[in-house]
Length: 134
Image 1 (cartoon, one colour):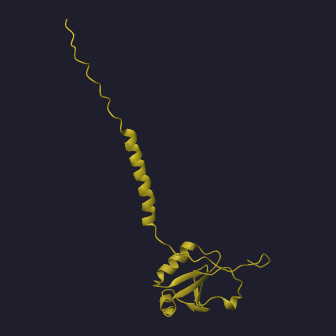
Image 2 (cartoon, rainbow, N blue to C red):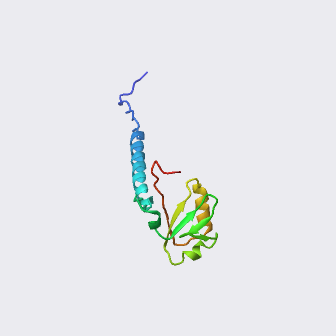
């Protein structure tokens, strides 16, 4: 048996590129997370509430008062449902004072039924001292 004098062929080890691919994918994920959150963020303006002590007669006007049974008064005058938009035609804002037991869902449904267009709604709260009657 005759042996060849040629050198043994080189064994080529394949390059493992999986680590590089994982690094690139992670970098792309971080890139899209950071830029996507910046591009998709909407600017929502929130006016923080201010606490002031006002007598009841100095509450902001126009003042819509909604009772627990759904009855509404605008600046002390009773108002029928469906007529609030017409009553606020000259006012860009309405201040809403509700009964303590009134559900937020009920209030939102009531205001949505009034079809207020371009009217800013502000909630007004009353601070009661601990000695005041509920």
